[in-house]
Image 1 (cartoon, rainbow over the protein chains, first blue to last red):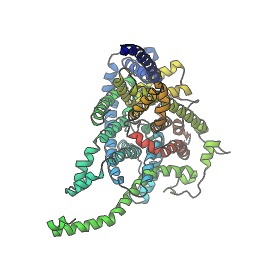
Image 2 (spheres, one colour; image 1 turned 90 degrees about the vertical axis):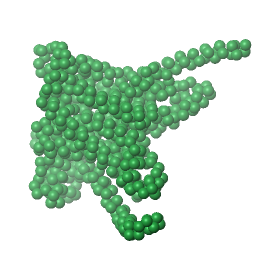
Image 3 (cartoon, chains in turn blue, red; image 1 turned 30 degrees about the vertical axis):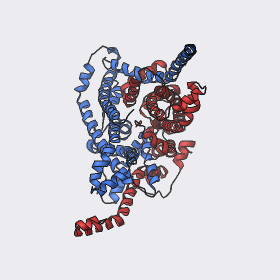
Image 4 (cartoon, one colour; image 1 turned 135 degrees about the vertical axis):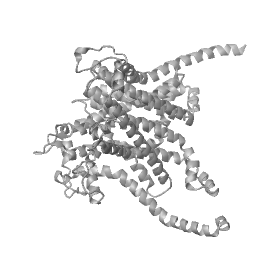
Length: 309
Length: 305
């Protein structure tokens, strides 16, 4: 009897608390949801519509006729686009492979106590922290054919016997863009791996050594399996970021020479803001999103499997 | 230690010699590798600094003067205090100080908005019954991966309709929208590591949930908040693409200005390097000072590249 008398006000109390919580949830979520909706969700949907219509700012008299998949057909058969895909693939695969391999190597090297370790770890943040535009102009000056320090250094050391126009041919320019990207991105991934390596208990290696395992065997049987979650995250993230590269290309090569470094991000930019073909620009952008989306799904799967959220 | 001797005497001698070589040469070899690494990291940036203080004549020497004979700060003076008499600098360089101010105003405001709006949303997602929570989180993850270029055309139209092109509030809205998913994602991971009992205790003592958030959760969220603040500031300061498209004479940021240092006689590399060095100082200070928080923030998972 006493309990029923007590439970009534308690029930009302819970429901008031519940109302408060709902109100609080709305208040806390609203600002972020509104901003994100305006800046990303709405444009993302509208972009899809634009990719289906004709919209050429240089020919306003044509209006915006509905074209269906015509823009996509045009893009997918455009030799410049196909070339851009090839260039993007080379750039992404080369940059990501080298960056990840180097990063693991350096992290293994630094994963021991030594004097000045804090300094090296701090310096590793430098390339990551500076704007990628600055990275671009910096390498443009270093690679300058007449007064650049790379030519000067290699010539002084006798490695080359004449100055090289580093950004003069498509393949060489792409290699240089990749090097500039490696310089900027590797140290940061290295810090990721270093953090992962430090969670591996030392006793594991001791035990393996006692059992007669060589350092190489230890790496493949202990280190690699244990840093696998980080490896997944690093590969997926780097691939996605590399796929979106724009700033570096814009400042270092502007897509040239003869479109030799026109990665997809740059191709889309040219279509939309130089040729002013908005419909086609949106179509390339959506094709790019599709590729990124596949990677994101892969990344989420990996993250879900490896890390518990 | 004794086992190899018992197994095979000859091999153990060989092993001992190797171990000796490893002990003596190992550290030397190790420090050579570390020195190479430090050189690789520092050399390009150092060259940018050296070029910024080399007089024009020394920039045009072959081979380059590795150490300038007559270092000069005239470019720094020109960019910050305006050109001295007779010194000609590109038109863009006159706007340099303005662009520094623009970058500072926009980045600071975006950081504040991201912390307040992002931490609030992340808290709600962790502790309150948000409908579709899992879907929301995954769409946050996807949003931060999405190439900006995908939505740049509609964004352009939105900004035009609102008449927010080349304004502070327009740029702040854009950057906040792009940074918030990352901030929410990181703060979500962070709040999850905090024990719920703390708030429950406060609420039993008569606090409302909002008071518990302000008085109990926020004071112990310092490291997470510092990390997302650093990421937000660095991202906004360093961003180039949207600034290139959406800013003009009024709100042009530093990353756009430094790419415009060319005159009729070509690119002014010395001035460009000077702009690059100055533009790198704020992000470098933040990265170095907040190193501990940034590196721990990394392990929270996804990070804006």
